[in-house]
Length: 151
Image 1: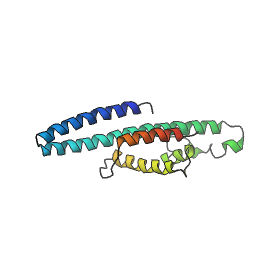
Image 2: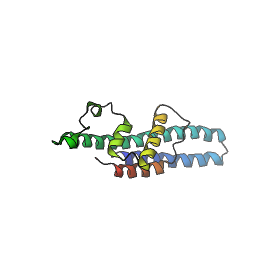
Image 3: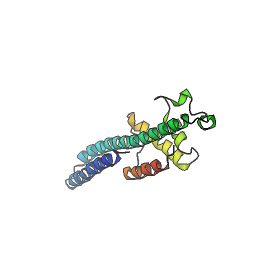
Image 4: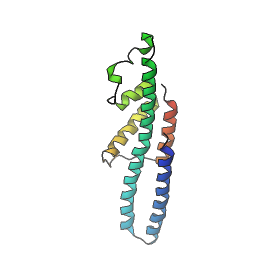
């Protein structure tokens, strides 16, 4: 998640300017301008959400690849059983499968990650009806979830 701090800093920079500009528009009672800015803020917030979650996806992919490589190299079949199947190779492995291989699928984090992933997909494909929530909270969740990943 090496780009997460940079993405978050860019979002914070934008948001500070947005707040200042909104305050200026409010002082001049320019409600139409505030409404236009709100639409742009929403789009940029969704973009930041997708980029930030993408950093977590990259971490899951990395842990998954480490897990597969470690398991298939095991000379004992009991240790590699199921890990050397063709369905776990290549770029076609679904995110939820990768996640289940590196995080306990019975954990509350697993369920929350999949809910967040659904919002990410919604936003990435142009959806605007699902709320993204707090970007600060997302950042904290992503770091917490990354620490829970195992290979």
